[in-house]
Image 1 (cartoon, rainbow, N blue to C red):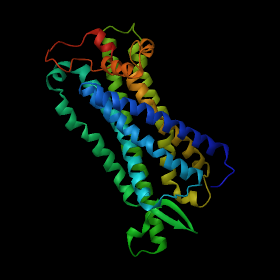
Image 2: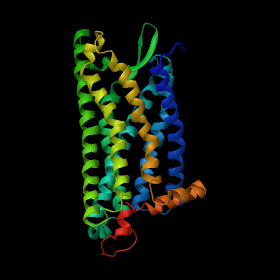
Image 3: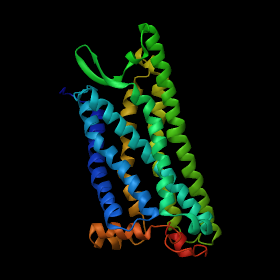
Image 4: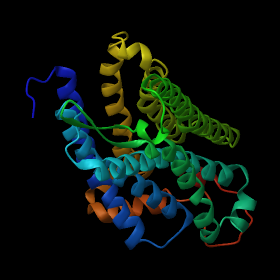
Amino acid sequence: MTTGYTAPQIITLVAQGITCVLGVLGNGLVIWVAGFRMARTVTTLCYLNLAIADFFFSATLPFFMVANAMRAQWPFGWFLCMLISFLGDTNLFGSVFLIAFIALDRCVCVLHPVWAQNHRTVSLAKKVILVPWVLALALTLPSVIFTTAVHDEGKEYCGFNTELWGNLTEEEKLQKFFTSLASIGINRFVVGFTIPMSIIAICYGLIAAKIRKKGMSNSSRPLRVLTAVVVSFFICWFPFQLCLLLYTVSIKALLKGKYQILFLLLGLTGSLAFFNSCLNPMLYVFLGQNFRERLIQSLPASLEKALTEDSDPISETTKSVSPPTEAELQEI
């Protein structure tokens, strides 16, 4: 393994290591509590799927850390190259789409409480929650199909397999590679970031407006929580998605030695985006009321209470058609 790492490379490795540990432990705890210790509701189903996505993505980080430490070399073979890329991308984008799904769910509860109380069931949620996973798969498959272990000057890398394009000249393969990479980058920026971010911002904007309309403007807690959710998602993801877009559309210039700073920025902003995977348990579970009192209890009991209290703005077991009260809206 090569030595003599630069400061950005060390920062990236440390950040990925922290994300891996916190992501596996934090999301693993949420999976245990939401999946095995609590009654199955729409809210716990959402938390469970989000935690599963973040857990498996965090679990793939050690492989990428080894590759980063070896200057992008891949020592694990072609099968793990495809598998880890597939698991990493699917769960990464699954997490993003699930966050948007949670935002939509909460928005429906607040804006249409009567409909939600009568139609929002666990059985329906189990079907609808497949949509974020299907979208994640659709976004991942085009790039994973062309991912394999490639050899260059006796070294193995996890990269783009151009052999699937058949009997094309090297120049034609290179041109097709540039076009494919740019298409994938633009698609991921639009579908994998812009659309989910827009959904989240719109939903929480509508929720905030509803809270203010209900005369709860004096209570800043709900607005602080909503602002933290949206801002943290944007801060973590936007720099990486922008750098990734610039990288994919500028790959030809990069190979000619131009815009080399993009390689540095891509690693640093990628670590920030990945960190969102271990932030989600805190943002969607721990940001409930009376959190300091919960810390006094045992951690599993604290999580269970947090998930219960941060549950739906309306009851998930009754068929009452009464609108949510001020206290219930403040629990969002």
